[in-house]
Length: 296
Length: 236
Figure 1: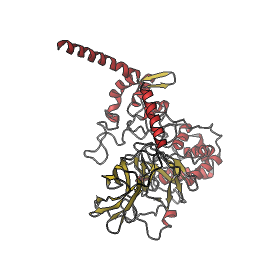
Figure 2 (figure 1 turned 90 degrees about the horizontal axis):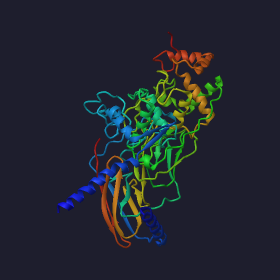
Figure 3 (figure 1 turned 135 degrees about the horizontal axis):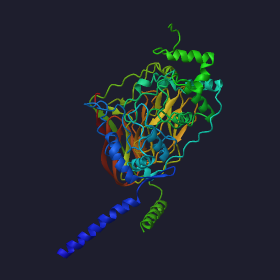
Figure 4 (figure 1 turned 120 degrees about the vertical axis):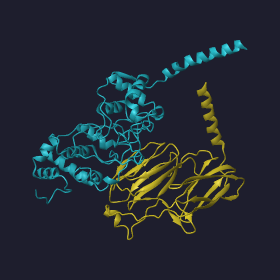
């Protein structure tokens, strides 16, 4: 009897020893340039830096976040942390509805997300961030069954012209960007107050006049990707099927001029025209929805 | 070894489905969906922010979270077989979802897993189609006037709430189902599920505001069984 117990014990120990090896074999890895990220190392980092907001289970229910409307209301955060279990990500180079690439997630860690509580993690090493991305990918089974989407092609940026800005302005009206972002990009369009994200939490459209960073980057290239891929999980849709690449660049040029407090070649060129100078001057007058007919 | 088993299982399933004779006309389940209590009063939609849609109506249309008919009939309830029927391949005909007058036609669209879905914009304004899928992929696409139909399909069964963020009153439902035995209740609350082979089925009725209910039904031969569902209406 005792002998049998011992042999059972031995089998048990053998299984216990073998288990981590099996897990090790299935570990998620990421490749950021020449750096390979490992899930195991990422786990350590996640439970040091991330879980306070993103939660023990990665579902965005960390102790810093309590959903809107509950009491007491969220003590520290006013924007819901990303739910990694749902695997829906805003900042992608891939089409709407697809998983982002490893680089997309990595870049979000480097940048942080403007107008949210997600800081930039430049203080960590490249290796650290690559490890974290590998661990974040273990929260959803989607990463096991689906491949990341194919990044959209961003053609080279054409030369900046006044015509390009003017055409972008027409597109801004025609595609009804202003319904949410407002006629002057102040984030005050007619639908702005009704917007909610996919978890029914209120969300504000981007105000172009406040600052220069966009949700997913700062460059014209990033801006192109934002509206072509859409920000999944938010009201911002993808325009990839409805805007031609040339038109998209025109829109990028115009959107830059809405950043009236940020120096850019687009704004400088626009300010050089009579039409542009008037519009920008009016936009700097706060509290006027159209900017016209105001005596100051 | 495991792969081999799986392969042979797949072969068996495929050959079985190929050998199966054409489906007999079989039995029918029909019935009526009703509510009890006081349903939420539907409010007129203020479309003044979208004049191109507002001008299509002489009296403002109302919200459609609960649509009722005479004799406590409940409309827009998806009745489907949730268990007992085999999964079926998608039909070749596309399911069509139209945006017209800043509303969704139909309000509830039922279709099968992997069936083609076409989303059309008949309006003179841009819409964004945002199906809030949780099990399937969530996407969100802009569709300006005159843009070609958005074509997509879903590979898992799910009840998906659909909304347009630009026009916050626009809400609808995609019912993605595993087989072709489904029906959406009409204005009189009635539904029919024809051509059911003999067997034991779980019939489920889903309403976007009142959730779902299930009942067991056993069909033998070509009989017609009556199944009725009653939803408890909440006044708010």
